[in-house]
Image 1 (cartoon, rainbow, N blue to C red):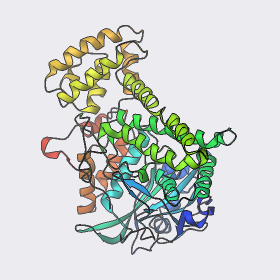
Image 2: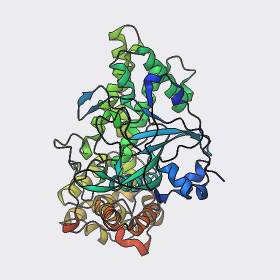
Image 3: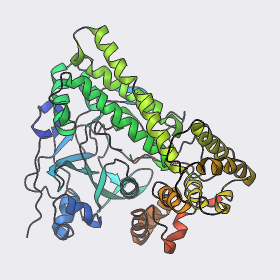
Image 4: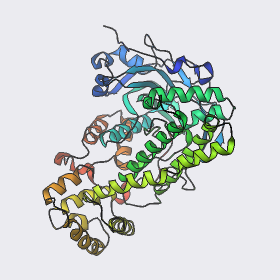
Amino acid sequence: MTVHFPFQNSYAALPDSFFARVAPTPVAAPRLIKLNRPLAVQLGLDPDLLETPEGAAILAGKTVPEGADPIAMAYAGHQFGHFVPQLGDGRAILLGEVIDREGVRRDIQLKGSGPTPFSRRGDGRAALGPVLREYIVSEAMYALGIPTTRSLAAVVTGEHVIRETALPGAVLTRVASSHIRVGTFQFFAVRRDTEAIRRLADHVIIRHYPELRATERPYHDLLAAIVARQAELIARWLLVGFIHGVMNTDNSSISGETIDYGPCAFMDAYNPAQVFSSIDEMGRYAYANQPRIALWNLTRLAECLLPLFSDEQEKAVAQAQDILGAFSDQFSAAYQAGLRRKVGLFTMRDGDEALIQDLLDAMAKNQADFTLTFRKLGDAAADDGGDVRAQFMEPAAFDEWAGRWRARIALEPQSAAERQAAMHAVNPMFIPRNHRVEAVIQAAVNDDNYAPFEELVQVLAKPFQDQPDYAAYADPPLPDQRVLQTFCGT
């Protein structure tokens, strides 16, 4: 049998200005190192066939499957606040779209598949390390219940890419509800192509927000819907200690999914100012800055949509500002509700926000591990909390707070077991610890050993379960294991 992708290509049916038609560049010796079999089944694909040499050739871009209409998407973007009028897919090619088993349209894109007209002198390739990082972290985010692009497969190419040294080349097959970004709208806005903006907005509404097709003000409602999804998404990031690292407008998805896992990382010790990305020298995209930057990005989107709001500039701006004004309350509501769940509160009472903030302040002052503090707090709902105290340099800081917390949870009817179960359902035991991810990458790059990668992916697929056999994966790094910087895949 032949590998079959039931492609539909709605984005490729848009005007030629939206993309460049380009085929992947064949590679020397593709070898499949990981197929996400459950995702393949969800997409209506045959995982057994994808694991054949024919499947590996497709997933590496060596063979273009029947029905594909490969394109590199055009977009612009603000990168660290500086506008670049043309970026586009410089090392990614969209093969096409499939309708999954839930009736959702999904992009299938090859990342690292060779140069495109948007490559800007780049080689269009990807190194093995960033491919493994995106596979690990995107699938971990999915298991954590956070909207995200996903990874269908990772393939080594049999070729090397040159970065600071020669590194094994690889291709990631990425799946997304779409790859449309804030920067996609900016690409047309800077060219004053209002008709293209309208065409793109209509496409986004049909694809992601079909309920808006019949509203009186669909473009206003589109901005409001995107604002709401971004507010919820960023709240979820903060609730698991995730730092994106490059929240440029070209990395901000219109669908509300997390996209583009470059120098991303999860915090170990809680620090609101934490930055890992080696290119974020000013801390623009630090952990606690992410809500502010999300609103900044959404404001850039609103600027693009102004011509669709009204012919009167002042009226359009006022309408956009009114919609954007909802972000802060929407983010705060999602974030505070999530924090209440993390500390085991089922109702709202005066003083709850201050109580939770006091815990966060104590965690920051005492370099408490973000993930383990909240996980062990669930255990403390049923015991004396010794494991939580161990996360604090000065355990007395926790003791003082814990007394007030116990008095607060005593006002609710849930049993200790019920509270613990509810807290464990939202506080993961396992996250992609930076030192673990780096160890996996080094084993693969240096020794062609993928057993650590396979085991880490397996553990992270069940982040809320204790998994005693893999308990060490929950441990924070030792001082000599700490990863202080993460790097962009390019």
